[in-house]
Length: 116
Image 1: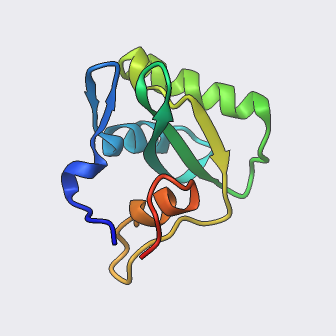
Image 2: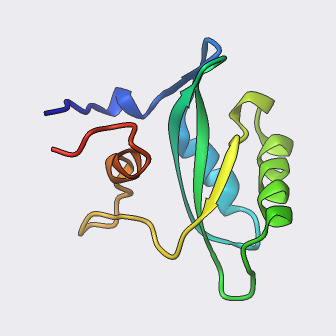
């Protein structure tokens, strides 16, 4: 069994403390983004790096170019180390019945956290 606390949502990358909500809010300001979720994934060099899961609005299609555009969009608004190193396009994000993002489910999907 794994223990999860709100502090687990903080990503420690090269000694920087990164809040995923700030990255999600930055992504949400891009016209192509309908919804976004961010988690930290292991990185040999930095300890962990942000990884974004993005739901696009109906007018946009997933592409490598759009992923790079979204990374640059975050970099233009936040510190460089807060930009997601990877952007994955998904159809929907896991949410609770009250609408809160279930980052735990994203971590389980990535194998960063074992399922209970």
